[in-house]
Image (cartoon, rainbow, N blue to C red; front, top):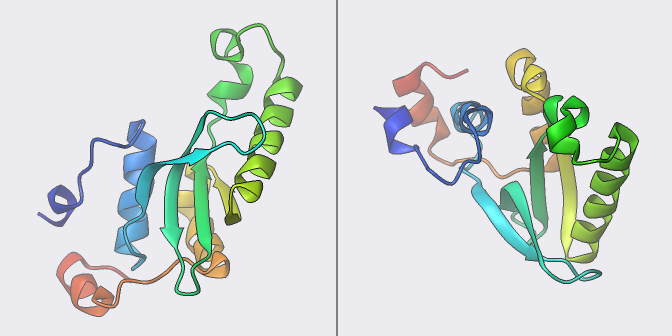
Length: 141
């Protein structure tokens, strides 16, 4: 029942939904999904997979990175993996210029081995004040 309560069609793929479920189970506030930012350099829209506003007002973004976008010829669209990495670094820089304070990149392996949990803690992602009660209902740790 808890999973259904937090289901959201805004996730771009199943991995994003799974990662979001872990985030909530670990006691973090549910993030805004696919939050739109205006690119201050190029104009146009940039969308963040996950976004939180910290207690101090800082914006924290998290991005799920999969291997496929670096190796799939169709997804690279005539570019190579280095072009893709440089494009992402440039995009991160533009997110900072748009007012984002922290960008956390992670993979599904980071989700499953708990590395993501530590990254979100270090980034200052806000916690759900009801977490102890929720944890007892879902068996969270």
